[in-house]
Amino acid sequence: MSSSANGLINRPILASIHTDAFQHNLNRVRELAPQSKIWSVIKSRAYGHSFEAALKGLASTDGFALLSIHNAGRLREDGWQGRILLLEGLFHENEVALAEKLACDLVVHCEAQVQWLESYKPHKPMNVFLKMNTGMNRLGFKPAAYRTAFHRLHAAGYKMHHMTHFANADHVDRLPTVGSQLELFNETIEGLNAPTSLANSATILWHRNALGDWVRPGIMLYGASPTGIYADIKHAHLQAVMQLQSEIIDIQELKKGDHVGYGGRYEAPEDMRIGVVACGYADGYPRHAKDGTPVWVGDANHGNGMICPIVGRVSMDMLTIDLRQAPEAKIGSVVELWGDKVPVDEVAHMSDTIGYELLCALAQRVPVVVK
Image 1 (cartoon, rainbow, N blue to C red):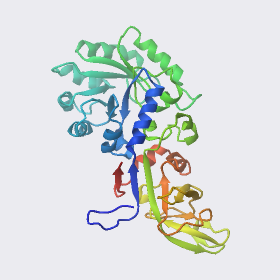
Image 2: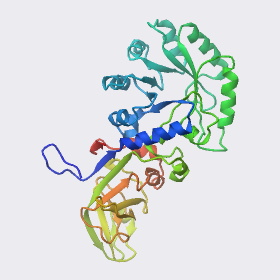
Image 3: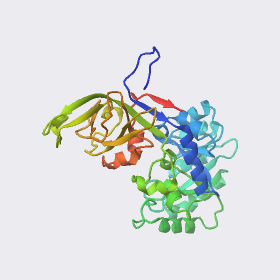
Image 4: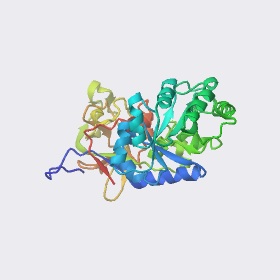
C-alpha cells in the first residue's frame, strides 16, 4: 500500500487526500451560498489534511482562514496570493507589521487588539473583521461596546467588516438560536455600512437566510457533518476528502467463547474468523471505538467488499474485526477505516466523539499521499 524511499514496503497504513473531493465540496458551498464569497477554513493543518492538499484542492476559493500568522507565512511561501484571514486576530502587538507585510485580513475581538491597531500606522488600509459576541460568549465585543470599537478602527483608517459566530446553527431549539443572534447582530450594526461574515458550515447547510457577504465553511469542505451525524448531510452530496486505509495482517480462528484483545471485551458467540488490522490509537484511530464500529473490507482493485464490525478493544497499533460477513477476506485484504465507504462521522459516533476530532488527530506516523 505504501513504500519508502529505498523501495521497502512500509507498514500498510495510508491516508489518501483526494483534492478533487475538495473542489467538489467547494462547488457545493458556492451552490448553497451563490451570493457570498468564501473563506475556506484550514486551521489545524487543514483539519489534518495538510496545507499542501488544501492549496491544491481549494485553489479557487476566495480566501483561506486560519489561526496563526506563522501559517499565513507558509501559505505565502507556497505561492498563495489571495486573501488570508486570521480567525483569532493577532496574539501580540509585535505581529501587526508582519500581518501587513503578509497582507492578512484581521479578526479583531478585544480591546487590546483595537489599541494595537490604533497605535500602528499601516502603509495602506488593512481589512478588519470586527467580531461581535451575539450570545456564544467566546470571542467578540458585546453589542454595547461594539459600535464604539467599530468607529475607532474606522477612524484609524481600517477597512471594516462585521462578523459574528452562531453557537447553535446545528440545532433548532437550543439557546441562543440563530434567529435571536442574527436579530441582535442586525440591530447593532444598523447604519454601519460594511460587508458581513456570519455563516459556518452548519449555517450554510441549514440557515441560508443568515449567510452574509462572506461565509466560513470548515468541516463541510472535508466531507463531514457539523452535527457529527452523517445522515444530516446526505442532502448536501458532499464527498469525503480523506480516506484512511490499511490491510489485514493476520487472521485468527476463534472457537465459541474465546475472547479478543485487552480485557477480553468481546466474546465469540460461535466459531468465527477475526481479522487483525494494522491500525491503532497511535495512528489516530479512536481507542474508545465500540464493538460494532464499521470498517470496509474488500478488494482495492475491483472495489468489491463488505462492511465488517470492530470487535474487541482497539490497541496501540492494531484493531480486530469480525470477518463473518467477509468470507473471502485474507491477509493483505484492504480495510477502509474511514472514507467514501465508511463515513468518518459513523466511526466518530461509535466512539462518542465527532468527525472533526478524528480528522485532526491523524497521527504524524501515518503516511499521507495527496492525489
